[in-house]
Image (cartoon, rainbow, N blue to C red):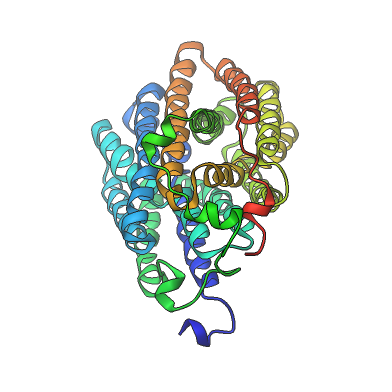
Length: 415
């Protein structure tokens, strides 16, 4: 079948993967939408809800190495089906949520692990299996699905929640997640070799590209290197300053400071649109320039935008923040994936990047919990936003100390 198509079958795999990642990212926006409705309905405080969100982020992070290990062993198709099934089941049960313990178990663990399995680790592995040309750009495209998911889902979830209640919104998302099982079952394939074809760009025969393809590094070996901890440390800060802090607490912060909920959601949707642009550009840039310097620049600009956030008091300022911050929300992923592959080998990417991604979500979980605690103690998020800015500047220095540059001759050039 693949040989009769007018285009490479890899593009079908990319489309299916994009929509799965898109939906998974949209699901991750649910806490910022339902925090205040849950407070109103059940009387739960922000710290208790943030604890459930933190559990979910930790579980989401753990889903990364689980996905990486399972993909290396069983292939992306079965892993994708399993992640979608876990997530749909968790959301379906969550629509009947009544206690904080149920919230912690269903959103925290079941949906957390399920969405972690269908995350950027899966997308990065698929890009590396199916593409030897345009690899950085494809990683950027798949990562941008998380931005597009935020853009598409957040405003819609807010409107459904306001008009018909949070349970209706979660039910709709659960049904949509279950429906995705069909195209994955029909069209997803694990490797080009299953169809008797080569990856886009062919198979490297000699040189550095071939060495990176064949190189394998165990997790134990990787953990003995400084580069692993530099990548994991900078990605920990990435998670702290994105999913954990802004993804969880920006909408409640904006509403509590006088912004209308739908208007604040519009600003966050704009952030998602900028995220798509920034991530696609990052994928293109990561095929051409020193990935360490790209990472340092992304973290530096993010830190500067976080410094300004506590002082924003009008919609114009919030939209400006959305543009600047949005351009590098997940722009860090393509260079991080490229650096990991270059340093430890593409054959080990699923496992090694899976654990680096886990550190990202540990940072996110800590930030989600810390944000709730600081808000309850101090009455606002100002101080915790400023600590995130400081950590962004630290990540800039960590990125510059990585020993490989992942230049385009390795990750993006034709074989």
